[in-house]
Image 1 (cartoon, rainbow, N blue to C red):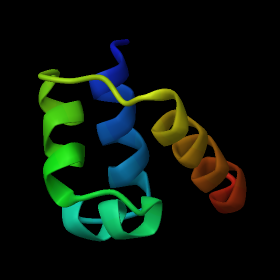
Image 2 (image 1 turned 180 degrees about the horizontal axis):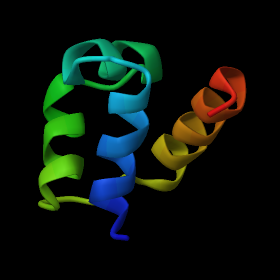
Image 3 (image 1 turned 180 degrees about the vertical axis):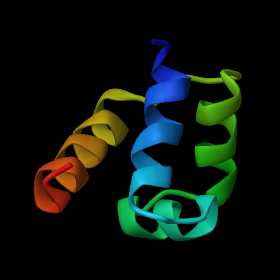
Length: 59
């Protein structure tokens, strides 16, 4: 599974919109949109924020 699909799956499991997920991670909504569409990949700091979010949510 591609990173873009994984990010979308994480967000949807928590029933969050892209905007709310971005707020949770401290990144703009547009970043979430680009990651999920495969236009960009999250940087190292964003990947750490996603990991921390997942750890806190116990997905």
